Image: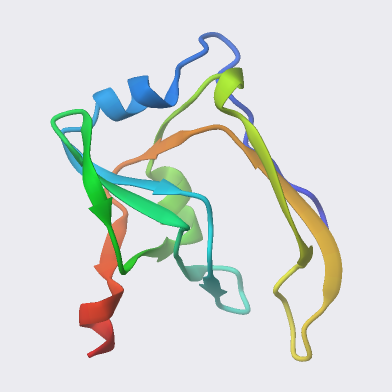
Length: 129
């Protein structure tokens, strides 16, 4: 499986705080927790490890029961900005999350902080009831 990464802004070392400062109302997602993606790798739903409400360019408390979903093309089309090299992190897993039975293949994906606009966000507790 290919290892795919999103490169940071090569011109300016934009910080995560600077990206957040440009958001009037949103959610800051930290890390990844679970994922669901269809066999065509088109429709997906992901969760994170932690979530924070953004109000007027500042973090305004933690949230819970959050997921985001989109189609792959809509999601990447919603990418508005990326952070600079200081925000870039490499993550990985020992399984690629494909097939039945599941495949075992180490994968890694690097990414700077990134700002997306117009992505559908769900309250998983309310959606599950």
